[in-house]
Image 1: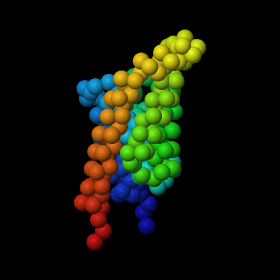
Image 2 (image 1 turned 120 degrees about the horizontal axis):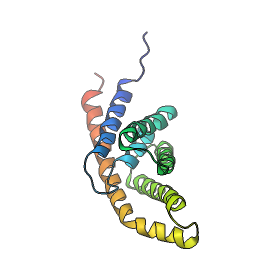
Image 3 (image 1 turned 135 degrees about the vertical axis):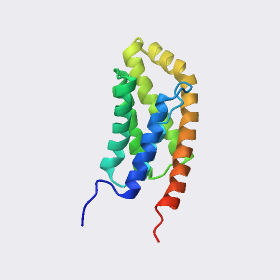
Image 4 (image 1 turned 90 degrees about the vertical axis):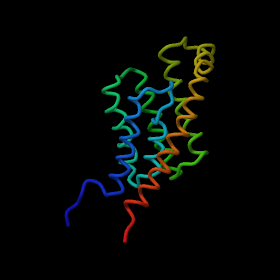
Length: 165
């Protein structure tokens, strides 16, 4: 029997993640992206821990090769890793896991912004997180939107195309 690289379900998951990551290239409000939803989706749906982490991180890296890399990228990838862990741990996408993921992404990435761009004291930390609140609102809205699209879109596609006879 010939072993394939991915199962049909895994190919479909990969396709959904790649299409979602490509939305980063479209005009969008600041932080209204699919990044966190992709990591949560990958963690929740891939049964292989290796694929759950590798696919979202690889998709993000490939899109960043076009969009650009910076020092904050280290914190963004750390946040993606953490959100993938949340998805893999809970094995589902829900309002709870989306809000936990959004919060984790916000805390980790803005900690990086503070380290790289603000005075390294309590005042700088408070200022950094306070100024990031409007972006957090957009992140939550984007995470809810893209998580819904990924979850319901994948559920529909799985029933339509992967049903066994």
